[in-house]
Length: 178
Image 1 (cartoon, helix red, strand yellow):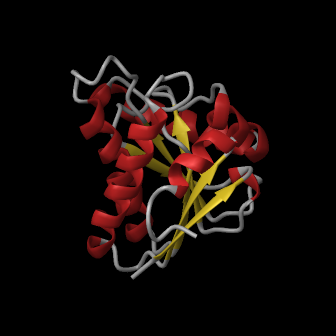
Image 2 (tube, rainbow, N blue to C red):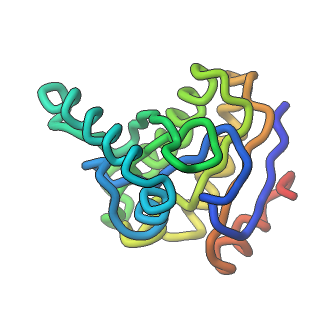
């Protein structure tokens, strides 16, 4: 079974196989963790994201819809891959937001497994400008990852990375996080 860890810090500086980007649907960078990852990775990441968006244009409107995930190289980051997933915008919980957020974690783990990646770091998906309540998002993140690990036995280490103290304290409430 994978080891689950909790850290407060900058996801772009972690030594892991994959970092997850809380991307916007265009895949072209934005604010928060998305912008930080794109800045740290450099123009190679943007070029690869542009290529993916162009390839998907006819099929899904381009980019990546909420709940789905795509994988790219790391650009200048020290990880092996970046997994981009688009979390839901919070609309009060009546538009399937919880299912979409859980799908972000499941699809990211699946991609990591498919690409032979053993360690993965997740940010706090959808809790910034997308407005998802931080406590509910933390619960979904931890529960979904724990429930998804048996289907992804190649994953040996999962790190929840909290940029701010508030999210860190919320995640600490869950058992088996060190």
